[in-house]
Amino acid sequence: MDKEQQVQQVGALIDQWLDQIDAEPDVAKLTPQAIQNVDTIIDSFVEIAMVGLDKQPEQWDDQFVGDVMFSRFMVILEADEQTQALYDLIPFALKKLFGYLRDQGKLPNAAHLIDWVNINAKGLQSLFNPKFDQFYRDLTTAMRREGINVQDHQAVDDFTKLYLKQHPDVGIKLYSDSDK
Image (tube, rainbow, N blue to C red):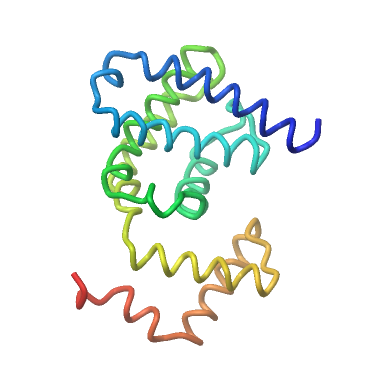
């Protein structure tokens, strides 16, 4: 199957899953915007996982979920999707997805992943920070320009350290409170 067919197949699967998840009582009672945010989170996570990284739910573990959420998730969201309201719903949305897939028999370690989300909920909700977002976008662009393999964690770490050494003002601005 070529990539386009895979995208279409995963897209149809996501739509099916979202129809079921959106009908669950605790999701259905949310505002339309909140439901849209939950759908965006689930859609983005699954597309990264199944299309971008070619991993089926039974292959997901806590390290994989962390990699998707902390390294890739922010980069694929459109600017108008990047709101604190969306980021606040990340733990809820991921737990709904993992619980749904558990109930479908597709995610055998769902309980462990739900625990991981609970432990990391604050970090997941804190992903939204315009300064950090711009930093990661700039860093990702620089890595692509230099041909850094983003799958190679050591290469990413080394490049990030070099980037911050070459651009010390960027690091200082990230952690300053001057524009709060």
